[in-house]
Length: 520
Ligand code: F6P
Image (cartoon, rainbow, N blue to C red; front, side, top):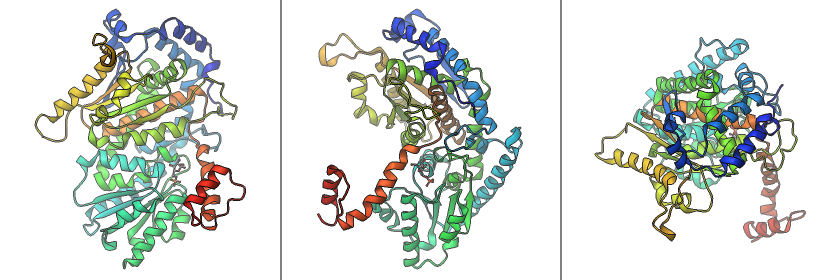
């Protein structure tokens, strides 16, 4: 499988380095607006269901041209096409990467992946029919999703985000942590006959999920429940393991859907239960529209590509190590956590796709973090405005509110605009503690309304942006070997907590184990 040419080996890299030394390092976006009356238009981009203003970023037209040249030299377009075509671009696991197929319409022309598309729609139709059946069943008042990582963050984020579209009458709970406080807290007050458990796990082996699923089943039986088959459903690629657990109702998916890319699959069942079959299809349609944009728009007008290239510019030239996201919509509370897994689990890599170490200085995933505005303004924004590090920030704002409380929405939007403005413009005449350096970069995303379509489009935008930077770095964005070591060590440590055996442990782990274990 041909991978991309690593960006630091492409000819445009040296030109970018020269551009950074001559103009990039000292770039002042305030001067750039004075010099270029068309800057807002040049650096804004319409894309399906959203608009992005990138003009407050530390980048000029010449640099962006070089970044487009770099992307072409690296073979970004061929790599993108290979993903859509179902080639095994996840080379370390020898798998295709086809989450885009999950949102392709049934009649889409998808070449060699046509059989897979047929299966996708068969499963989707079955899952949505089940969702409608459960929605109509008023005895089910509580849905408990048990899953972690990609089997939790996406559905949890989307159910919250789309609460406006949810039918009343059902409560949704998400249990991910092996910490029993979480499950115990959710189970309190639930009645087995009114509860549906969804066991969401691609592998059906994840330790946390299996522990929670077993405890939920025990609770169900001990509370008098007698119909496991009717009150448990599984969302998994491992249908056999679900059956052994005693679950008859299983909605499957495939190894070519990565966990953090799986909310579009059966893992999205909680979303379908909340917003219905039509709502779920709208979510898929929004993502599909962004897929088509990514696939067909020239790089120069391709929003995920422009963002991914900006990410490379910031990470590898400006050496920014972190990026913040501030959704100005309280329903998007869990969006930063969702995007954090998407970006950091995909691109937090230190070897290229062939396994060779990346050269020193070729940083990969930044730290992605965030909290909704305006709350963040009273917490971390201080550091963004006056701290010693520059952290690009992303604003997400929605033009039309979903409530009619007088005066709130203009206040919210004014704050988002003012913060972006303050970061850029700064204030240098107040003296000492009161000065703001300004020239602090931000991007600004605008939705007309938070709908299933606009949410779907935005999530797909982020997926493709992460694909773009990962492809330029020459890494495999679709494996996650970095999660394995801790899992193995936890298995070794767990019995030691009871036995007190510290043999072979480092002194720090041994000391802590003595304090935490039964011997303490
Ligand atoms: O943390 C590693 C990981 O494999 C994630 O990629 C995945 O989303 C999560 O665990 C859950 O995995 P599963 O769905 O197989 O339970």
